[in-house]
Length: 237
Ligand SMILES: [Zn+2]
Image 1 (cartoon, rainbow, N blue to C red):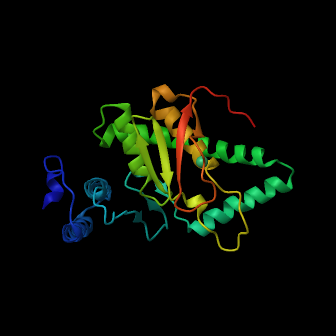
Image 2 (cartoon, helix red, strand yellow):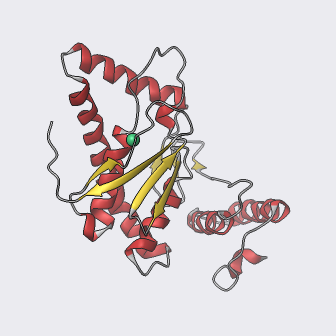
């Protein structure tokens, strides 16, 4: 089976091959005493099928005794419906505005939340890249990160090395949410997140602040928002 020949045979699989690989995964996991092998195989499988435009299988392991779920990078994960996470965001926005914060201040709260998440994930990704990915340059690492974060439903992140910009399409925050009127959701959380990740994984972008390059197409589903980076720009509330 190709599962054991990844290093020498990098390839994209067609649908039948993916199903065949998956069956082999299940067979091996049933035999194994731990999940470690399965985790690494899942990571490898995702890596090999990511160029398949038709679909990508994203797998998580769920412990049916504890109810915990882990990703291929061995980190505990949680899955929300888009409605659920956007209702959380919208409710926080309503509360902050109700407490007297301006729209700009509210946006900064989400920007900072994104920075915190991004810095933390950037450190995790740095370690992950060192252990599992074959990257030689910062540009390659940024591209790998965009690919990694494009497989969990947040949207599609892409890196343009020539322009040194990161763009996002299909941002989950711009999706229509059950029961919401017109939420002031746009790219503030993502701008913070991208700033945080880039500050950690890209030396030239330390303490950067992502800004919408050109016109930011707010509140439009499937839009593309392009982020450029202002280095050393002060973050203030
Ligand atoms: Zn934007």
